[in-house]
Structure formats: structure tokens, C-alpha cells
Image 1 (cartoon, helix red, strand yellow):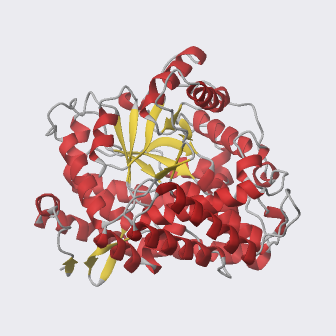
Image 2: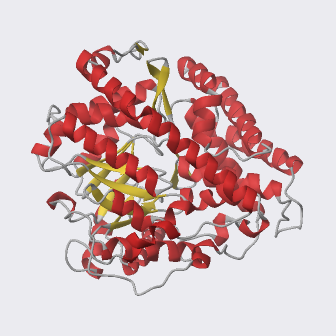
Length: 537
């Protein structure tokens, strides 16, 4: 029936590999993939066709006329929010479960939830996927001494890879699996029933959904899976991350398609901002200014996006959550820097609370308690479903770019983040720490997107009126690499890897046509490099 080819177990994970990829689990993955392969292809073709249509017609996205009846029908609501999801105040973000120590520490925290991340904060090596999924299974089945039972721990919000990623280590009928189906399939097969019986899942985050048709596909996958695993319809709940400007015009429709399975929508800043460059970066009217100085959630296009998301969710009975605070607290709690970081996170997150969000994420586990306190001081009850912003968001509200230019600091910072992300990826990690913040693929996306766009439009620096050119970026890139080598006293291997990362970064920002995702570029076009450095590390 199915011709399945599977790579050998990652070194040192033979037991975990055999526990996950049993004959029955493999058969389930084969059925799942064979059922939906063609529909996944169509989704990706539709994305490409939409991009071509926008470019050929030089048009702008808008609220679709053919789905106006869904937006205009005031009666429909999503299914009731499950008990364990009523309070979403603070989730711990970017928790790649292969990092066992951080995952377990998050489970012992007071957070409402954990973003169990196989996407933005994770590098999807076979080792990381197998170890991460196995660690989730161990937690769900209460096999780890000293950890609370899953019914008493923060709720697990499982985030599989997005549709742009593939799993290289398993082929079914001669084709590699879509990455999200490998992750989702194994997680559901091994933990779905136990999570449902414990009334704490299965709950998911869905990344990089660009249209209601993609939400429809996920809904079909959920229904098929519930039937196969004999779970009641609507057992699976999912929060969709609105990370594309195109999806911002279809929020109502996305909720509608998932209404039996919806856990709401999420808004963030950097993947969403990068999507403007991905879709319209070659157009001068979509020139995005320096993110380090001119882009934040208070800017009109981002505030409008958040307001529309909160209004859309709450009028349909769905939860609306905000993005992740990336700042890290210093170790010295009595230091002025500690107070400064706390104040900065508080100001940014209070802005979101006042906009009506029901929760958000932090990376630093020590920020959980102060952010929970912030909710207690400024809201009443477990959520803000009663808050419906009285705003009328238009097409222009969502598309207007903020004013501002480009600074030398911002250019160098974007270069550094891009290089360091690729360096982390080459050693098998999906996030890293830089200048007091956690950086992941979302910040790498916006960083390399801005450098590509600034070269493309030959913008001039505010500092000295120099034009951003290939030559300038190359010169600054070498400065950044030399500084990183000098500051960190790197081994020969690490220095070689960093130089390789720099070469990849300059390659990607000089492409004639914008590569849609940096992770796809690294995962598909440079897989051999990752293997080289991970083996030698």
C-alpha cells in the first residue's frame, strides 16, 4: 500500500526513535500524508499564484468580496473555549522541547501555557525532532519523576513546522513528507488521546497560515485525525498565528473555517512585518524603515492589525493573544539594568493588554510572574472576551508603512542577527541570545528582509548619507564577523562556521528575487552544510 523509506535513528536516540516510529505509527503517518499530499501541494501552488497575481497586476490585498457574507453574518461563533484555555495570560515562547532542561523548567513554572516549538525557535534536525517529540510523549504520559502530571502543568501548545518545511528523513511513495504532517502526526498518534482524557489538549499553534483555504485544510486534517483516533469532533483546538499581511484580510474567514477547532488567533511583530517585504518588497511604497528605531506595535499599521485581530476574535467568541517578549532579565535583580528591562517589557505588554489581548508570551521564565501580576492589576477575570474595540479598520490602515529611514546601527544589527541565526542553524539550534534578547527565525526573517530591501532600493543612511549597496553590506559584514570572533574567542571550527554563515547571509540578501523564507532556503538549498557542521561539532 505504502512504500516508506526512513533514515536511520539519529546517533544516541535509537531507543527514542524506535518508541516513536513503530509500525503502527509509520502506517498512520503514511495514511495521513497520502490523504493530504495533493492538498498541501495546492496550498503551496496557491501561494505562488497569489504572489504572481499581485505582482502582475501591481494590486494590493483587500478584504475578499466573495467571502463578505461570512464577515457580515453577525450570528456565527466559534465553539466554546475549553476550560484549560480560558486563561491564556502568559505562555512561555520558543520552547524547543529537545532542550530538555528548559522544557522541564517551563513545566514547573506558574505559566498558563508553553509554546512547545518545532518551528521558529527550533532547528528541525532529525535529532531535534525525534528528541523533542519523545520528550513531549514522556511528559504527557507522566514518565518524568519530579514533574507535575500533565493535567496540573502549564498547558502544552504544540507548534509543528509550517507548510514551507519538509521532513528529509522520511519518504512515502517516493516523496519527502511535509514537515508539519510529520510533527503533527507523531504528536497526535502518541499523545492525542491522553491529552484529551486529561482535559488539556490536544492544543496547537499553527504557523504562517496565509489564507482561509489553508485554515480549511488544517480543519480537514483535524477532522480526519479525530476520526482515525476515535476522538470526539472538536477535540483538537488550534491558535492560528497571523504572520502574513495577506492573512490579516481573512481573519474572520480563518476563524470560520476552524470554528469547531479554534483556540483563537495570535498577532506578533517580526514575521508579520517581514511578510510585507516578502510580498511587496520590490515596491517603493512598501519600503520598511529601520526596525530598531521606527517599527513597533504602536505604529499605525501594526496597531491596526492588533486591533482588528482582537475585535475579530472577541466578536466571534475566540481568544486573541499577542506576541513574545524577547528581552532577557539580567541575573542581578538589584541592578539598574534589571529594573530597566522589567520596565521595558511592562510598558510593551501593558500596551497589548489595554488593546484587549487575552494573553501573550515571554521567553524568559522569570518574566512569567511579573507579567501575570500585570494582567491581575489591569484586567478582571481569566480573559478579555468582553472587550471589543470600537474600531473600523480599512485596507489602508493595514498597508500604510511607517515613516522613517535607515541607521548604520540598524543595518549592522540586522546583519549580525542574520549571520548569528544562520550560525545557530548550522550547529542545529533554532534560537540564540544577542544583546540581551532571544533571537529566532522570526527576527532573522525581518533582519535579512530589511537588508535585501535596502540594497534593492539603494536607500541612504541617516548617519552620513551613504547608500546601502552590496559593497557597503560586505564591508560591514566583515566588521561584524571580526567583532564576533574577537569578543568570543572562537575555536577554529566555530570561526569557520561563522564565516560560512556570513557567506550564506550575503548570498541570500543579494538574490535577484526575494527568497520567501530563510528557513526554507537553509533547509532545502543548503542541507548539506548543516549536516557538515553538526557532525563535526
